[in-house]
Image 1 (spheres, rainbow, N blue to C red):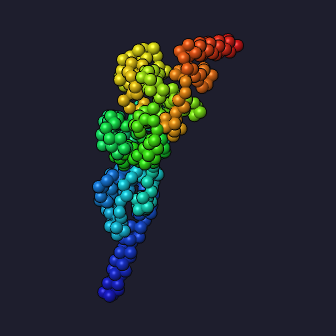
Image 2 (image 1 turned 90 degrees about the vertical axis):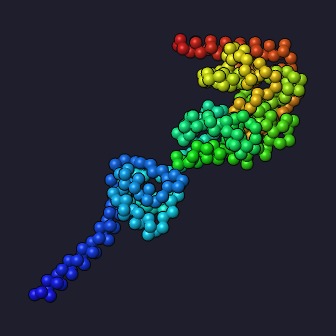
Image 3 (image 1 turned 60 degrees about the horizontal axis):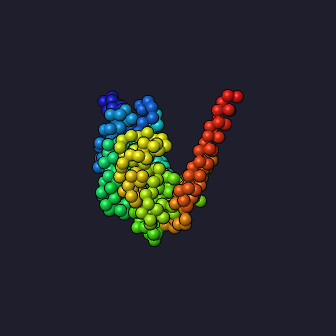
Length: 341
């Protein structure tokens, strides 16, 4: 009888011991408590124990202890990044995401003609505004772009699609962009009539003046000819840029007030090129600045229906301005007639 009781106790103990790993496996595989999608950030220097505690604290997993045990058994190496977690994600699924380094990236697209303020808006979810403007004037980043001494990063980012995540540091994100510029754009600025940084500035002026690729060499040619004869460039987009530099961030066409405003970026009030580029130039604009079409033309004005009319003299230019105004008047008249129908 006594032996029978001992055997029963042994069977019960064995069964309980068997339930421990079974219970652990069930806890590992079962749906977790997370009620909605969440993001887990693993930053540089974060330890496995810290992540396990954070997962439990955020209500993503039920047991930090079990997660730590698994991580130590598998010698988990954390990969810095942003991890997207689905509702009710199991502890097993979380562990596998971290083991694989299944990082969630966001694509940030920078396109030609973008300037500082548009880049800042594009990066606002990843780089706080105050930090952005401090980094925008970083001598270290300007040097990394290949232009030591440049007063800002204007024009020093490469147009491209960048994959970023929220665990990246703000400086790291901008460094990625200036290094892309250094590798992809900087080598293509050599060999023109101006030095590389001036070529970049000239390309940015042409980029902001026309969106027609065929016109870029002619626009660059007009500005280069003006530089050669010490004539002010009178580039409308620089007067607009000067407005933004004063803190007036109306993103509207240049006004008479803008043109008359004395400012070191306004080429109506200064001689020569502005101190920095005024936007991110395209590859076509850079080619135009390297090989501008310098002829007799010293002026150009929009046609009103796409493109520009070029002229060698002020007299011819004024005729083109009159043509432009007539075209705008005609378009407004047609618009009013359509609205009355």
